[in-house]
Length: 503
Ligand code: TXA
Ligand code: MG
Image (cartoon, rainbow, N blue to C red):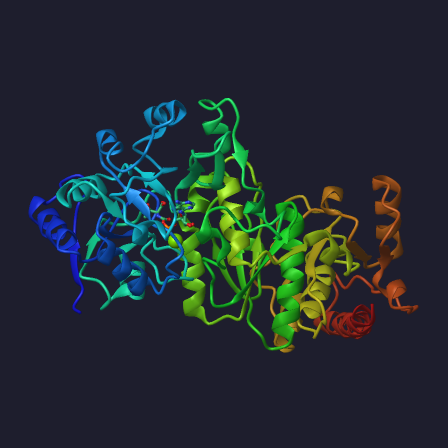
């Protein structure tokens, strides 16, 4: 089958394309179309054979019911037995929009559409292309997400094309969707109404209309023995090709943990994937790193989630580590999808971070223009078994200065360079419980200890590697003295490397 693609502008909908798509649906064919949540794979909801085709195209188990999409509230009574007053109130508030409600079905709705159930899920989308299409198709379109079963839901027409090209008649390309996660599903056949799938209409929002909202306990994998009430929620949906692991904990700790694990993979010659945020991506150095959005906007994270999982499939990584997000408001839906994609595989950032004593190594010198940056750069070039954030700071830095020219010349002769470095002033706030401070001499160490009250994990470099030799200050001396200084530091750093690798 050749799949036709029609580009449609939501603000200027071309009627002819909608009519053409509507005709295909009325004749029992399949058309993928945008909704505000994800792209749907449309079929005539009242036509049993069309439902069969939908399952075939998606490769979806036929016990997994489809959602019926309507464009007007007046279309509802024809397909459902009764409309509870609360459902009417909810429709008033949230339709059109990303809310699906489950009702007792009428006989006109074939069991093919409802996966053999006596209930039917109904939603009124807000997207204008979707609404026009529903009307053109006769008022009722069944539409699961337009992906091959088990793949992340499509948020662009390209995603649909990748999954379903050749298997469906048409794709209406209305650009990227707005929300990016499937609708909230609310079962109205039980009292109180129960959320079967979290989405953009959050529990808090529903609670403004409903006196009480229940939540299917299987949603967050709390009750793994009970099957979810929405049949589709039991499948390992949204599964990326790679193993996905969620790293639990506050962002700062998660970054440390992921850096630590990523480094281990890279040392073994493996390339891990990392899902970070605008705020954290700059903190990662190893692996294939992608930003899912900003922590300031859950919406941005929801919108990018599926696209990022698909993008990792293209990268061919075998494992992906993701930061986790607060499961509040829309974060609930984000974490639900992420957990499903991960098959509920979560690890604790804190436990991982605890396994490594130091994460940051700070070299402390006077001006941070020669010995400190030299030591830092030499250490960065050693083979370390673990990853460290290696920095250098000076006790007297009035303004940022480049590295001393002689120091740089010596570094260059050893194929190292700190040419773009600018000296930085020591700030006690940068020292954390897992920072190792290594001063060039005893007086720097003592100054920091007495003035900043720092007592632990602070040594002179020589002391830490159990040597007597002090590192002299070559400033104002000939190049050869810088050379000697380099050699001393290099020797000590090699011992340091050994010591760190034995920790
Ligand atoms: O946002 C959405 O809802 C998208 C767009 C296209 O509208 N559609 C969507 O459909 O996500 P789908 O098929 O991927 O997911 C439908 C979910 C499945 O988990 C299914 O088991 C559940 O709805 N469902 C459908 N009818 C149901 C019913 N009668 N009782 C319980 N769960 C039902
Ligand atoms: Mg789906």
